[in-house]
Image 1 (cartoon, rainbow, N blue to C red):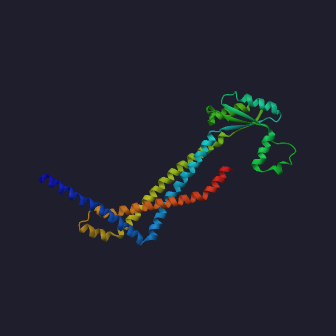
Image 2 (cartoon, rainbow, N blue to C red; image 1 turned 135 degrees about the vertical axis):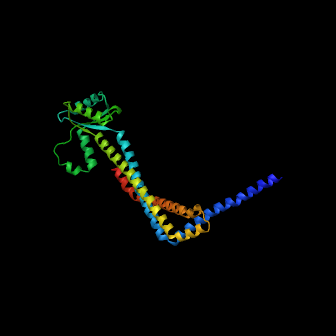
Image 3 (cartoon, helix red, strand yellow; image 1 turned 45 degrees about the horizontal axis):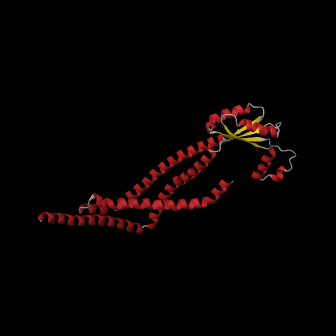
Length: 277
């Protein structure tokens, strides 16, 4: 009987302690929010600085993500444009295109008549009125060569290009894979730059938060000294400043999300126009 009474007393004693613990946190949070209400402009500016620091690497990350998706689409359609000799007839050109498919590293070869190439050129660059004054078609017959996976590297494609240039039917070979390699280099550079910028701005955010909290501690050092004299624990003294850091972190994150949404909404139409071009 005495044992059960003792256990009941322990449970009833733990409830007030637990309530006091959460009550102290509630008071610290309420005190922090009230302090920010007294200086709204300073709080908003601090959140804005943190938000902008987070925004920059976020936008670069979104840009890189779109660039990598475009890069994948380029990688899947690696091609070479083969310009045929002007003395080669269309029939021989089409036959030569079929012969190219037998070469290792070439997946397919599509013959393009010079008249079709000229029409496509007119439609693409809107030069129909200008090109009508030409007496002859300046474009040669050509072949669009799609490379297989075995030749989908710059080294293998260069070897294949060199071997094709040795054929008398071919005047010029334009290797489109070189643009993909340049795009890879640009993507890698921007990716590394984003990580470096993100790291530097993360350090800047930590320094901003640390300096803001340090100033808050300096402004309340007399109050802290009194609390320590009357028996306030370190946890009790630090609690409002922890909530202050959380407040600025969440505020900066919300500010960054809003800014990022606005910037992406503004850039959405130009980006779609660029993709369609």
